[in-house]
Structures are given as structure tokens and as C-alpha cells.
Length: 514
Image (cartoon, rainbow, N blue to C red; front, side, top):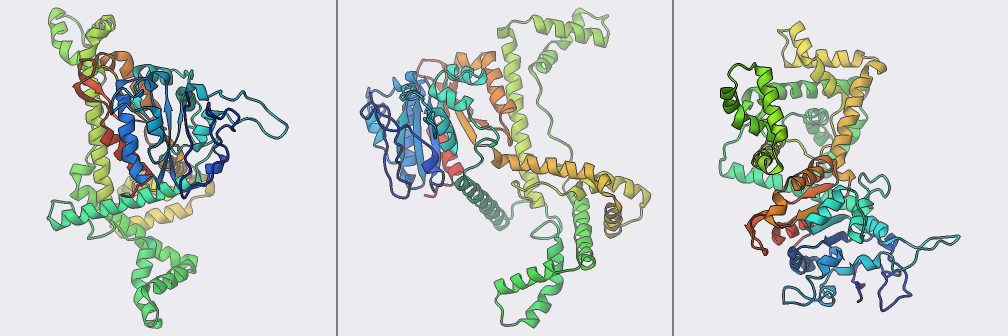
């Protein structure tokens, strides 16, 4: 059975290296090279063995409205392909799926080695799972079955889908980032900024309660801001014929031409204003800045809460430490099923922690007017944070301006070696924030029966994807399953995330415009 097709669409490079098909056994294997500068977003969609595979045509049809902006290649495992054999209208044959606009190819395990690998003096045959990895800007596995989840977290690569995941360039060290993908990142940031500004305007219009620090606009004025405020009127008087954009260009040129002494004066003004902001935000917004989010508790912590009083009553003479050892010994003796209620409570508390942390981070971003995609703090900020309390104690009567000046003078007096620790902190902070764009992502949508989802091993494997391989600097994201009555009859968690949510995530990552 032919397992894929190539569709030539307007606005994309001609593909002279079409994927192999059973009807064209002599055709060349797929190569990602012709697509390196393709203006479209590249989505590698994959499905493993789950009934939720029947949502693949729905997802592809929804994305077909953006076929001029996104190119999709589909990987199906052998079990997944069994759900798309024309059994019903929602389970069309692969031939029908190939005709959906934007679907450029469909692959199965048989395509991996459709062409025996050979090497000549000048080149070698492209390997499909490597080429698909290079081609993809984003991989979405929907559904992700319990079997494929176990394979991925244990490094098994016994099929095309798992081979792509196993060969994924987790930090862009091998392949780098496709130039067009950087453009998608920039557009995504612009959309997020515009959305943030829109929400702020709406809140202002409805007089929603908000904390106002240091007036409107940016929390504190930058070095250039002070220069522009002071010199802007003068430049306008000297150049009355210039438009606003031209005046701004002149100001920028003059600012860059400042001597070190002139620049230092404006920098001190900016630092003093920033110190004012730091003091006011701590005084006016304690509900946001007052302490960290309470960490999530492990399953053992919930077990102790539940059993502590009971064990203490049974053993009234035990010391605190002996009681703790007894509780831990009993915990280790529990069977997996007995631990499940506590692990479930822990997972719920973890979700609470992640939700509260996200809300606090968003509140900080809004309150400080900061860009969540910023590129890290300069070395001086780490120095000032480390020395501020010391300088305050030494000069308790110093105001914002004097304190900022003293800190700046101490910073300028440091030798290069003395600055190195703070420069290392700044470099680490920069790398942390650059991580959001460094790795191409794999988004997975688990789908399995409720009993499978509730098993401890599933929680451990999901934790690997979310905690060890996920986060801002990671390459995995998990769309949490929903709860409903499943096709197998189970009622509870395990249903794949709704197809509308999956499409929404893809549209947001690809910056698709309706």
C-alpha cells in the first residue's frame, strides 16, 4: 500500500527529492535540504496506537484553512493506521487524507528503509527519520499511546515515530534553528506583546483594580529615555522641518556619540529611577512580591499528613525522629495501589503549584512591564542586588539617588577579575532566557484508558517529559488528558486533549493568521 504522497503547492520550493512510494520504487528518498528556506511553518504530526487517532483527519482539516502558511507531514504507526481504513466517515482511508490541503506526505514504518542505504564518493542516501527531524519546526504526537510513551521515555527507537524522537536535536546544537523559524518566533513575540497591551487597555477602560507604580508606561526610565526627555525639545527646535521618525533617528545618533562622562550622567539618572521603582514595588505590591509560591508536596508528604496522628497514638513513647523513621518504613511497605491516592493528591498539588507560579510570573511581567522573552539581566544588576543591603546599612540615610550613585561607583571601581562572578551570573541568565527559542519542541497528547493513566509508571514517565525534558529550556510539552467516558467504557482521566486545543496550540506556535 502506498504510504505517502507529494503535493506541489504555490509558494514553496519544488521538491525534486520526493519521498518513495510503492508506485515509484526508483524515486529518490526524501531530503530536507530543498525546504531549508521554505517560508511555510513545518509541522510533523504523528499518531500512535489509540482510538483518538480518528481525530487526525479533523485536525488536518482544521489546519487546511492555513495551507498557504503551514506544511504538514504525517507519521502513522502500524496500530494507528488501523483506525484509518475507511470504517466510517470519521475514519477515512489514507488516500482521502492525502488530498487534504497542506498535507504534503504520509509515512509509515515501512518507509524508513524503503531504499537500502548506500554511500558513494560524493554523497549518501538520506535517512528518513533524520531528514524529518531536520525538516520539522514542531512535532506533535496526537495521540501518544501508553506504549509509545514508555518507548520514548526509555530511549527505544523501534519504528519511524520513535526514531525521529530519539534523534531529535534537543538543543539545536546539530541542526541549528531554521532561519524562517526565527521569524516565526519574532512574530509570536510581537503577537504576545500586542495581546498584553490590548488586555491592559481593556482593563484600564473597565477600571479593573491594578497596582500603579511610578506612573504610566515603563516602570522606570532608561538611560536613553532620560537623554531623550532632556534633549528632545532642543533637537526639535534645531530641526523644525524633520518628521517624528527623523527626529528620533537624530536623537539616537547623538546619544550614541556621547562621551563616557556625558553617558555616565544619564546612566546614573536611570539607575536612580530604577532603585525608586524597586522600593515602590516592594512597598505597594506585597501581594505579588511577598514570598515564593508554596512548593508542591510529594506523595509521601500527603501520606504523613494522613497517618501521623494514627501512628503517634499507636506509639505514644516515640520521639519525633523515631516516629518519622517508622512512618517512612511503613510508606516503603505500601503496595503501588495503596500509594495511588497519595500520588494522585501530589499530582493535583503539583498542578496547583504550576498554576500559581504561572499566575505570579504573569503578574510580575505585567507589574514590571517586563518582556517575558527578555534576554537576561546585565552583570551590574546582579552586583547591585548582592550589595544593596550592605550599602543601605553603611549609609542608612541615603535616598534613592545617593544609594544608586554609591552602588554605581563601587561597580566602576571593580577590577575585571572582581566583575567576573557577576558576569558569569549574567551569562547564565542570558542562556536561561534564550532557551525558549533554542530547542525545537515536541508536543505530546497522551491518550489511554483510565486504568493505564492512573498507574504509577505512567505518572513517572509523564514526569520525565514534563520535568526532566520539558520547561523553557527543554524540548517536550505535555497537553494533559481530559476526563470523560472513554471508548473502552472507562470513566475518568485519559482522553486525549480536545482537537480544538491541539489545533489552537499549533496555530499559536506557527503564528497562523485567520
